[in-house]
Image (tube, rainbow, N blue to C red; front, top):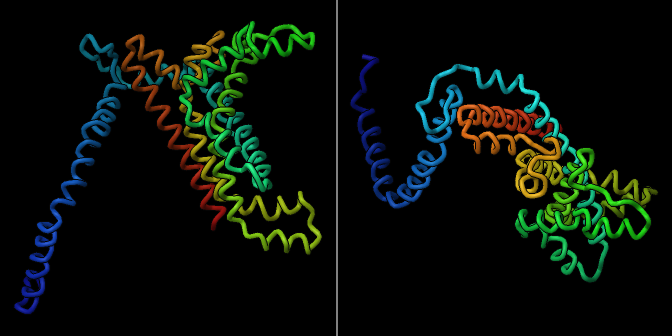
Length: 306
């Protein structure tokens, strides 16, 4: 008896089913609009990702049939000195560019926030590099860094020798980092500026009454007020920094002596030489690294909130 519906239950369930079907028929246009992007996502993102993952276990050049080789690609990558060097370069770029970029952007935001005039002018001026394509920015900075470029001309006027900004393996990566900071700091500055203007003024007044100077007010009022903004920029910036490619390709091509070669550039290089199975494995190792970094960031942020 308990396994069957009673007569009193059926009238309640049947109208509910009819109502669901009726709602679906009424909203079929809305479901169609949702269905189209889902189908496109499956066709052009999920299926290629799954296919690429399967290809990472093969030796394939795109011209001949793929040959299954198990985890050989992953083993070769983890044992490769070139991969280790590219990983170090990627981490160096991410850490230095993020720290330097956020520091400069915060200083600019604090300075502009104090201005009573020309705020809009400085916002637009510093944001122009952000909307300028990185390829164009890289080409301009390549000319500046040239052996006979503007930078060497300026330091030469003070009696210093010309510097190989992009040809010296010890400083080439830092030259690219400076370019990246210059191009991206405007975005962080605007975000910081918006966050600064939302901090209640009475908190600064209370700090001043308590005898806090400018630096203590910054530590006890400004920084706590920017906590969420810093977290957002950190997550956004890490993913972008690890995916650095354009400026490497345009300015150094990974040189000199692979001192500026990053993981993404290494993926591109192997793809160009039709090492498609190896490239797929390298891409998935890189994806796994980004997932781990993102999870750690989210964990730290939510832990602080708790």
